[in-house]
Image (tube, helix red, strand yellow):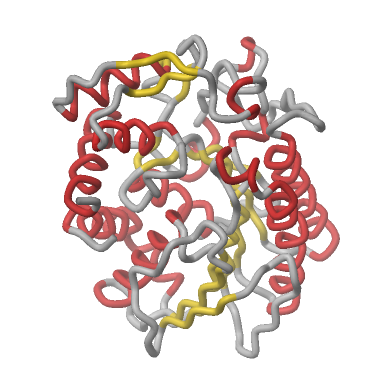
Length: 350
């Protein structure tokens, strides 16, 4: 995955963190899901900080069972240790841990409908095991990767959607194994904060994308690009009127680190870009325009029931809280981000 676009992204994130990154100097950071899209970015940013910013390098411990993770960008070494482990089972670490980034999860509807129980386990049992470890190690901070899916299909009166919105979610619907397990994961976090004072925060990402995403995971931007590479029309599911907002990886990672390094314990934060809420048909046209492709668009049924029966009509974050408390402002517009993703994908997926 390493590539000039990826390397530029890593440097952009490292620079955006500024002096706050020094909190990580000489510390040990445990990351779950480290071989996945977000995990590899975290590991690479931490390696960049160790090399260029921190007064003392940090140590990275990554845990992944490779159910959807692909491979690591960074080779193992003195400051990076990789453990193959399924976090639905307890994890023993025989050294101090200062920060935990619990990013393991199965986020693509293609995969979480395939691995229904595993999806529930990683967000619930896995989260509890990480909270137990955080309590045992007396960590400085932990973040749990929840999802904007906790809001379900929001009432129109709550779009943009603030963290205070309780959600409109079915506990037995096609997305329930993902949505409800993320909601329970957040409940665990608050319970451990209130019971044991574990310094945990929750982040709710809104459609994060960028280099390193699997082109075969059926999330919309990589799926469109994969079809362009095969010279096939872009598949727009259903009416094409569902709306989303998209956050490029450099903005998202900057927001995640800001939450990790904050003192806002027991709180959830939306992380995304609320500037361009667009329909899936509009997104398809932007991807065609940016790529220079003329393959066109085709209306098709969703690949499974998570798309056909329960695809939320709108998804747009209210970012007031993270902007106000943590000075987070997304900077990358959709066309710029899509262009970067396509450039990376063309040069790394021949």
